[in-house]
Amino acid sequence: MHQKFESNGCVYDVEIFHYSNTDIVRFYEKKNEQYGEMLKDLVIATPSYGFLLIQYIADDAVLTGSLNKEYFCEKMITDIIDFLENNLPSCKNIYLPYHIDFVTVSSSEEYNGEY
Image (cartoon, rainbow, N blue to C red; front, side, top):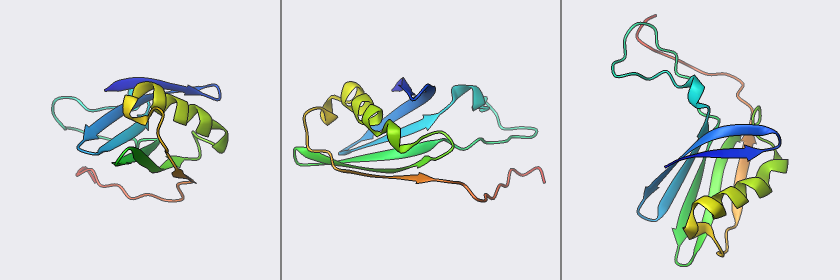
């Protein structure tokens, strides 16, 4: 399911994946997606801006995840929770404790078969 998330003057694309008692929420910008039908030539994969994991336990849920501090901040938590409640009916009117890490990327490793 594709959605848009707006908060703190920013707009991000969101994909929500559901499996069994779990939802995964992926934040990214569609304009940075470079995947076509076939991987060829030089492919640079821009990382997502973060992921949230919602695990449903009985009639409640636990929310965990990591969001890139370059795009997200603690002020956006209320908007994130509202977004989840509005787009995932299973998150509405439940006990939803959370632990979200705001991370800074200090290094990365990439291999794309070209070099």
